[in-house]
Length: 169
Image (cartoon, rainbow, N blue to C red; front, side, top):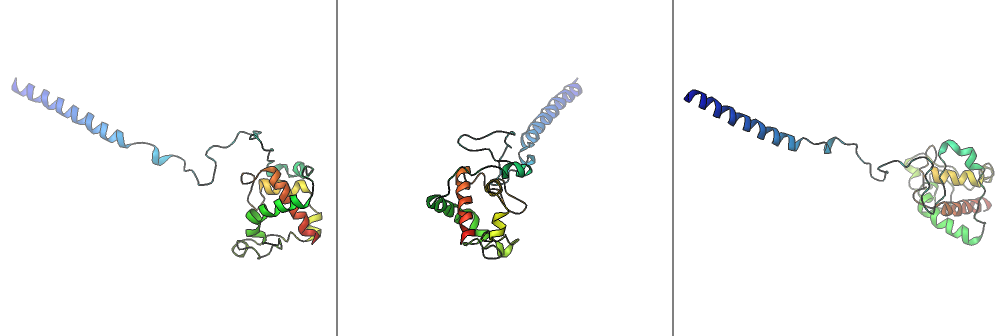
């Protein structure tokens, strides 16, 4: 009889130990370290296609460059518009294209990366429409990053107006 009581108590203690060990192991087995990493500066969830944030214009993807190139510039060219564009150009564009837009290795980033084109070249400017420049600023290109989340569509049009003044110099 004592043998059965001993075996039963051993079974109860062993079962309790197994449950406790399982509970401790289960507590520390979680998925937190195995989830998809969030890259700083990147969206956590992609926006559904066709969604337009309030107060902004739709940013056309790179695949729709031809459609974007046909967009007319809704911001009239003026000295005030060019000045606003110059402010944003200095912030977003000058690190690569240089303060005067000459491209090459005039910008601090361009010395360590692919040299950007000369934005003051009149032939280069004539070959591209205002809509093309706008879509390139907003959606980016092969080497150029997209600034659609860094500036509004209207601000990008101001930058386009400023770019047009660079070629006139």
